[in-house]
Length: 127
Image 1: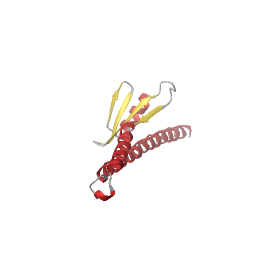
Image 2: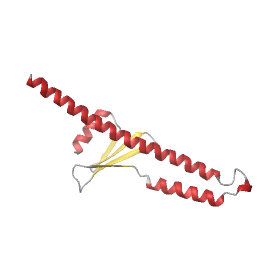
Image 3: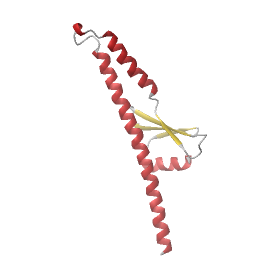
Image 4: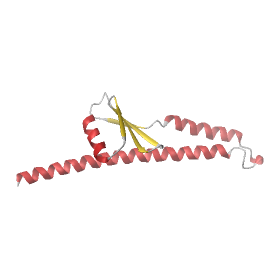
C-alpha cells in the first residue's frame, strides 16, 4: 500500500517527504501541507489529515475575544479586527479542506487510470 502510494505521488508529480511510512505532501507551498498515515488497525486504509484542530480552536477564540471586546458605541476599531483574523483563518481552513479532497480525488483517478491501462493491456494480449 505504501509503495503504491509512493508510486502514485511520483506519477502525479507531488512534492512529498516520507518519514516512517507517513507522507507529508505540500499541496500549496508555504500554505497547505497534508499528512497521510497508514492506519495500523485497518491495513488497507490511509488517513488524510491536516493539523486543523489548532486553527479551529484559534478561530473560536478570536471570535469569542472579538465579541467580548466589541462595543457598538466604540466604532469600527473596537473588536472587528479579531473577526477579520477569524475570517482569514477560516478561509485558510476551507482551502486546506479543498486541497485534501482534491488530492484524494487525484489519487483515486490515478488508480482508475492505472487499472484501465492494465485492462487494456490484457485485452490487447487476448486478441
